Amino acid sequence: MPANLPPQYYELEREYKAERDPRERLRLAQELLRMMPKHKGTAKLQADMKAKISKHRKALEGGEKSHGARQAPAHDHVEKEGAGQVILIGPPNSGKSSLLESLSHAKPLVADYPYATREPLAGMMMYGTVQIQLIDTPPISAESFEGYLSSLIRNADMVVLVADLATDTMENDLKVVTELLDEKRIILKPEITEEPEDARYCYKKTIICAHKEYDDEDGSRYARLKENFDSFVIAPTSILDDDSLNGFRKAVFDGLQIMRVFTKPVGHEADFHDPIILPIGGNVEQAATTLHRDFAQKLKFAKIWGEGKFDGQRVQGDFVLSDGDIIEFHT
Image (cartoon, rainbow, N blue to C red; front, side):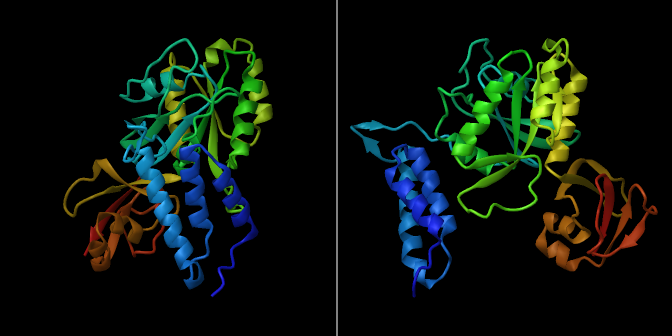
């Protein structure tokens, strides 16, 4: 049976063979595997590529030795935790690390010199009772782009591009970031309305963080930022202003397009400490499935409390929920 591989596959294969950076080779191998049609004609190709991916991972994790020394551990994957994984990217000294420190219990190295962040660091940001994972990353500039960043960005649920309102080079610095990402086939988008036609490309939902807002005394840099990113959500922030940080938390939560649903055991008060997290548009059956698949199968009906609903309204599994609803399951 013929493989029937698309033309883009052969272009990407040439890049893979020419690439020398081990982390980028791993990413390209993963892209090649994703691009392969899944049928009997590609079974051997799939097996060969999976073996290559495994080999690349072992090498990056230090499983293989080079000239008698273990290689540095890979940073191209951070295990997802919480309701969503959000990656902070930006130019040197834009304030990503200070943001992470202010919004979580993480303790990144915060310094007034560029390139202080050398590897990714994750921290958990709270929005009400919802935990959202933030990842601080090394800066992106014409002189520096860590090879593993492509994989981290592609894997994240959302991107926050941090703009430094304290510097006159803000526009050019951001242009360098977006152009480098374009070269890596990562396109920052205000909304993802469709998948790219070319499987080598990756569209990433992005919001803009206008950081150090108090240093933009006349508001001119913020105005230019709005012009350059007119379709994007822009969240002004300062580590000196709790209200702005709360606004950033809400912008991130809204950007993830998720909602909170609280459970109420029969005969008891609602539990507001550990909400069920669902995508916008999620229904009762999906909420039940997050507790346990068997539980969802046994569900007879549910009662709902929430804005615009009758208290204790009886609903079935296909009933669409809203953020903040309280649900009582009956089996």
